[in-house]
Length: 163
Image 1 (tube, helix red, strand yellow):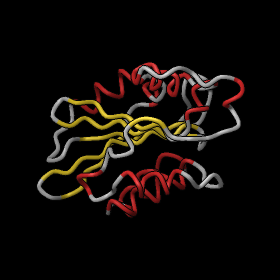
Image 2 (tube, helix red, strand yellow):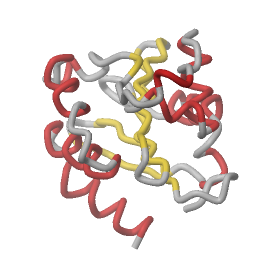
Image 3 (tube, rainbow, N blue to C red):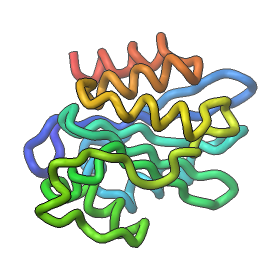
């Protein structure tokens, strides 16, 4: 899929229903529109709140999770906000300034590192996953899916999108 910048991007919806992980795909047109992603996640059922995993050009990813009406966001790389619309929208939503020129050498996540605490993935472990500077966004999302227990179906959905 390609976002409005002509970049490969995809967004996978994930939620649990009747104890089973369920998956959906958001339209290509929303992969660079945070409000549209939030609206789509809000429409999903789910026992622990639905979420979207958005990969933009394997450069960065965004997690959008809605639990009991509360929007929780995680951006894997704050420096992405300088070049990518979706990342800039996440910073705006979080009320965080864009990184300055001197900050562009340092990659770090912003937002809710504890977004999956209730699913057994705490802030420390999430931070460790995101600190691997050699990993691409798709690799981090695969590791996240593996850790949360839905690796195989997630990989099938992603393979169908990008394959």
